[in-house]
Length: 175
Image 1 (spheres, rainbow, N blue to C red):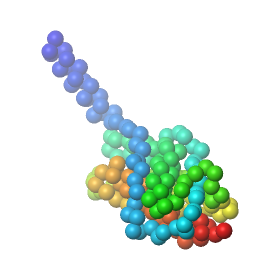
Image 2 (image 1 turned 90 degrees about the vertical axis):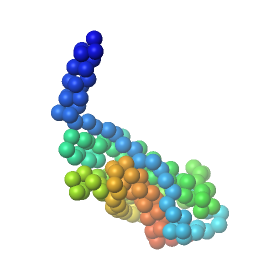
Image 3 (image 1 turned 90 degrees about the horizontal axis):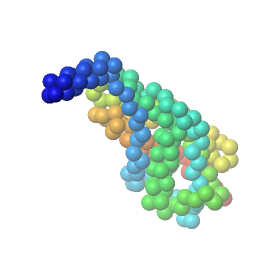
């Protein structure tokens, strides 16, 4: 019985090694350094909308026998969660009834494996559509020692960059 189990295990490991493996990754929402984001006008309320309609899986990275996939709708939702947490810490209320709207959509997420799989670089391209109809394309690239960490940091930096953008700030401060 033990020999049979060992053979099954060996064959399973061999099949996995030959075919590779894949995973769908969704980054963790995080709050950037609050000191890097200027304060907002008192009493500001904002509505955040996930404007990414695509829910299919897209290839995030293919390296050797490992493929990472991303669902850009889910990634955009994580960006919105980061924005909501960050805005709350900056004393901004996020509510569906707000007059000011930010519609966000991550359009592309990609991981580029550097140095033989070490130091992966995550690039995010996203759009912020303001309630006045203005669309603002944005990009961030960051590296880390793991795919997961590079992705998490990229979402956190996208949150920071969105809230530091002068066009976004001017829209939010306007009457």
